[in-house]
Image (tube, rainbow, N blue to C red; front, top):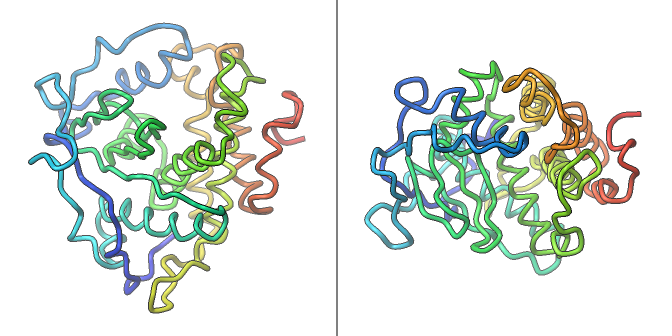
Amino acid sequence: MTFNPDADISTNTTRRRGRGAVVAGAGGIGLLGIIALIAGPLLGIDLTGLIPSGDGSGGGGGGAGSPEESSLTECKTGQDANEKVDCRMAGAEVALNAFWEDNVTGYVKPGMVVVDGSATTACGTASNAVGPFYCPPDQTVYIDPTFFQLMQQQFGASANELAQLYIVGHEWGHHIQYITGTMDKYPNNGTGPDSNSVRTELQADCYAGAWIARMSEEKDADGVPYLQPSTEEQRRDALNAALVVGDDHIQEQSGGFVNPESFTHGTSEERQFWFANGYANGLDVCAATFTLPGDRLGPQ
């Protein structure tokens, strides 16, 4: 999905926070780090001690208003979003807020932070060794764009523009679950293919698909759509990202075996299915991730 070059994204409130990134593939965490942080909890082991801090100091970045935080004032147009990944994240923030304001009564915007190396959060330290996440206590999405490089270099994912927007849209889905009470209604009840954790993640995939299907309908103040309709090739890119972050795929890559009882996010097939389901059928189908039997969470 491509931003319209003259779309206005200057209204973004995205912040850049951190102490300078380590470039993936040149001193970054590589495959071991991504396995430790994503697969480690799935396998019941802690490998985070093997991961470099990312900034060489072991500490986090600055908080709001610190010298290590700045606004993305350079991100003004859709052309900026097409050319620069940080601006793509800022543009995604504007587009996602427009979509969810139309679909959630009393919508409250989350914060959006582009992490540069490492940054402190209410959920602990975010760094370029950690994938994108949503932190409920401070209602903020944190994303280090070098994660996309890791997906490409270490897992062979395409991780192009639409895949990146899918990932951001997925994290926004967790914010929707938080502000609408879904997280309270379906609290963490452990791991496994039928767990609330898996169902929560699949619903966020569904939300991301629904947003991407309709995002070209959202317009800036001058009536310019933020984004152009997605192409089939771009949608395959997003589905490829969903495959890469499936529990079964991650476990196969990290340990060579699959343990369904440790699942927290759903299989690659399930994640692709719910993204596609949201894309094809809209937000109304997304509630079903919490009502279907566990053996019916994938394609039938």
